[in-house]
Picture (cartoon, rainbow, N blue to C red):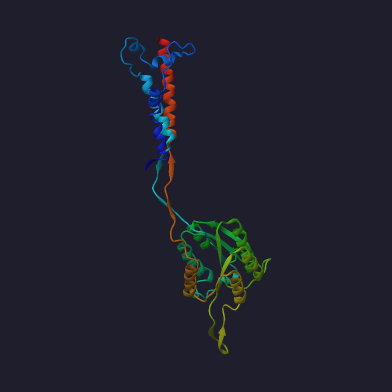
Length: 328
């Protein structure tokens, strides 16, 4: 759609006519008048000498057109594109996913699917639902690595999560370092930041204790939701009869609860796929996505077209006037 940003500038269009009406003409015998040969062709001197009404010459019409183009350029013509909805949110969502050796255990969705595979599928769906949020991905094992910085590109975050493998960051678990990595990213982000940390173990590596990292996070306003994953205790038949087995015996729930409570977040326990899906649905309610973005129209400035046309026209008028002046 075409529009003028400053349409009031069009009020200057009749300025030459107003000036010609209000300002007195220069006396023909004014000795101080500078004579420019090319301007002699701007007036119909023959008609003036014969007493006929003066007619506007070609150069006069060209000058008026040049003025009109300059006024149009000053009015800032613009072309508005189609309306585009920009995501609007004040939240930065960081996902910290445990990729230590224990995530290869298959106890959340049958014997053929590892814990990490289930997390990839469920967390991947969660990422796609977070339209409007800036999402970042941290993978941690013996060390914590920033896989993707905060971005609106949910497809890329989901793809990189699906490409993660068990042991890519080491076989142990550095929960404190993962929180520390999130704190570094929060310092560079604008707006509220939330960390969702998922693990199946206890802090066995790293340079920072999770409790200390949680205290720093609380001071900087970083809210942390923690998720503990691992199968529920079940009875299995052995050589000596039935016995209880706890696949999640290595999960340090007390530390995860402390981290969540210290930072104002929530702790969740997921013992199978359905429970994990329910956890992420609860997170959707705790950290709702934006209701919608604002509509904007891309603006393309067009003022340089009439300005350029006026410039080229002025050069043409000057050359035409010089030629007529030299010929007369």
